[in-house]
Each structure stands twice: as C-alpha cells, then as structure tokens.
Image 1 (cartoon, rainbow, N blue to C red):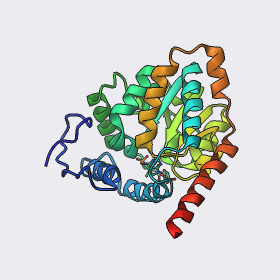
Image 2: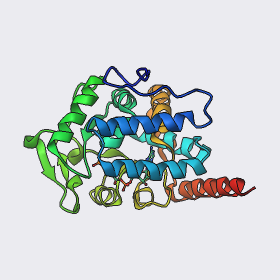
Image 3: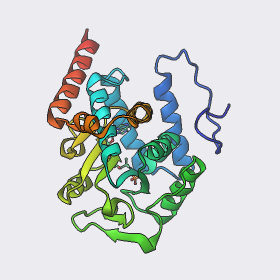
Length: 264
Ligand code: PTJ
C-alpha cells in the first residue's frame, strides 16, 4: 500500500496498481472515487455515475479524441476571455481531480464553487476543506449568507453563491445534470460541460461540451491554459468559436467506430 502520487497528502491508502495492467489508469480512478466515497466527498449515486462514465470511456478507447481536443481549446479560450468565470465542483470532481481543478482556476483566474446535486452543508464544507488542502485560496458555495437560488432549477443545485455562479458569465460544469445546464443557459451564461456521454441532456444543452474523461480533460485544460494565457484576445476569440452539435456528432461517431472495432 502506498500514497497515490499527485493526489495530495490526505489519507490515501490505495493499493498499488501495476503500471503493466492494460487498464491501470481506469483502475486508479476507480480507487480515487471509492476513496472519495469512504471519506465522505462522494455519495453512492456518484459511484453509479462514475460507472456509467467508465462504459462510455471504454468506447473511446480511454483516449482523448481530436474532437475533445478541439472542445478543450474552445473551452479554455472562453474561460480566459470571460469577465467572471466560475468552475463548479461536485463530489465526483473533488475526488477525482482536486489538484487539477484548483490549478485551472488559478491560471484562468476563475472562481471555484462547490455545487451539489444531492445537497448537504456538511459535504459542501468537507469538499471546500479538501480543495483548500489542494491549494485553493477561496472556495465559494459553502457559506449560507451568500446563498441565492436559481428559480428554474428543481434540484439542490438551485442554490448558488451570489459572488460566484450567480454573477458568472462563463461556467464550467463538469459531470452535470441537464436541468442546471439549461437553466444557466436561459440566464444568459455560456456553459461548458465535461461529459463522457455525448447523448446526455447536459452535453446537448451546453455551448461547449468536452466528451472526455474528466481526469484527462482537466490535465489537458491546465496545459492548454498555460499556453493560451499568452495569446491575444482576438486569437482567443477565434478559438472560442465552436459548433457543439457538430462536435458531439463527431464524438458519437468515434464511439460507434469503437463499438465496431470490439465486434471484430
Ligand atoms: O456530488 P453531487 O451530489 O453533486 O452528485 C454528483 C453526481 C455525478 C452523482 C450527479 O451530478 C449526477 O447524478 O450526475 P449524472 O446525472 O449521473 O451525470 C453525470 C454524467 O457524467 C454522466 O453522463 C456520466 O456519463 C458522466 N461521467 C461520469 N464519470 C465521468 C463522466 N464524465 C467525464 N468523466 C468522468 N470521469
């Protein structure tokens, strides 16, 4: 047993997964999510959602596609162009990519906000502390006095922070449900989603959807943000132009080819 490198200092006693295992990365992520469940960051429904994601990732060959790379460029350019960008974090995101999400916030000058589908103020605070342990200076979403409601949303996600999502112009919502994506769009915000399912309501409702595993997508977003932070606004605007429907279709076709290859 050893600590997982790059996952911070906190309480990980994950078993060592052989580098030679053909699906080592997927198994490592599985350990992170189950560790997150044991430490109270992730809820049982989060484990089921992760399993659904794994199935789609399998069809992508567990690799970032060219379509996802194009979406990542557009997403990062949009975050860099925004006046008030916000990155929303739920239990699964906190368990899988805490360090990467904090780094992306810093490079793109975004705010970090905890927003949960299955709300609980104890879990909000736990996630907030966890993100701070990974270097976040400020985490919004866990203080009652700044809490406001988006009336179009039925779930606990309607509760947002007046300093964050409420006044954001661009919001990154990884592993999201469709309701909030639609509501955020209705209120005039540009919505970026990360979702392995190109057919989900979230994927179709967002302005930019990155069809990739969040663990690979976030790493690449951090790298891209470092590169693009030196690029002129006029060029960023060109990169930010994006046809979500066409990109989703390309991702879907990539998966169909993946299925076809499995048949042979
Ligand atoms: O912590 P909470 O309370 O906010 O709850 C978080 C979950 C994920 C349980 C909640 O947001 C939820 O129920 O989400 P859904 O509606 O199941 O949607 C999650 C989407 O993310 C699905 O389309 C999955 O295919 C996709 N997904 C799962 N794991 C990954 C993923 N996409 C990218 N990377 C993953 N690792």
